[in-house]
Image (cartoon, rainbow, N blue to C red; front, side, top):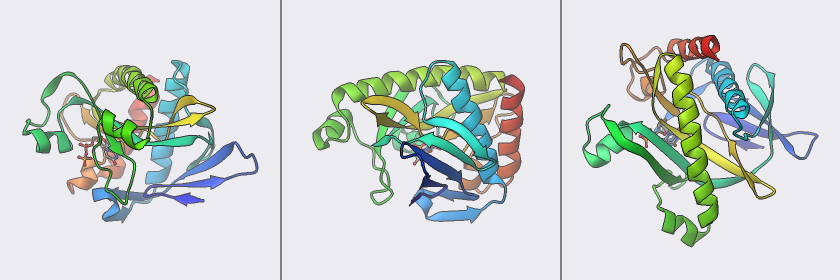
Length: 230
Ligand code: UDP
């Protein structure tokens, strides 16, 4: 069994399958701030399952097999690539801090960034030559990750726009099954920045990070809107 900040992965009878369980916790600063939010797990499970099914329909292969109950899903067991891919459409979060760019500035091109998937190291940023040098992924795997990330960004922007939400940025994780790269982990307001297109309201984990309150109501609203457009 593997327990992360917001999910638990458990083995099951079938050796090629894992059970992914969404917990009722919000965390920030890589787990240093943590709060139990009853009902969050099931909303995130529903949002992520809906998005993964939408991506599958659009020919993006993901690890999702099927929802098991309100907070758990069966997923394909993959060898996780220890690199997180961050995709940005508008400037926000660490990008603004690092480069002194105002929040909300539209970026002239989609930005792709990589971080090491390591709580112990606080997910440090890493570049392509560093990734290949220490063997986290090969050049051709990275090319595939970048291509997939841009395709997923296009599909998600289209979906969220229909739901009246601006997809500001998000994080993806990938894994390999028999050499094939597939999308893993989750896509939810925990891993995306989503702003209401009309009001600019933050509808994602920034409500927790910035102490704005109302996280669960915002996540429920994101789910309701997605269900209406998918
Ligand atoms: N993100 C994430 N997990 C991480 C780091 C980032 O899901 O460990 C997401 C985050 O929610 C945001 C995007 O990736 O949607 C970009 O995050 P950023 O680099 O701005 O860092 P943050 O401001 O979240 O520290």
